[in-house]
Image (cartoon, rainbow, N blue to C red):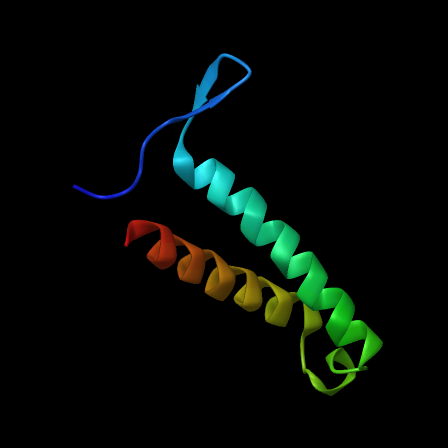
Length: 68
């Protein structure tokens, strides 16, 4: 059995991946602000694709952490 159970948000049961996606989005926003501050995105060929890839990496990392 995995660690995924429905989350009760104000009486509405939500799939756990929805909550994980919101958390990953917030983490990605923070990482993007750091990258903009350090001017890292200037050296990337396609910044939106790079940020999307970072979101997928963060999402998968959080999912693996929660599954344990």
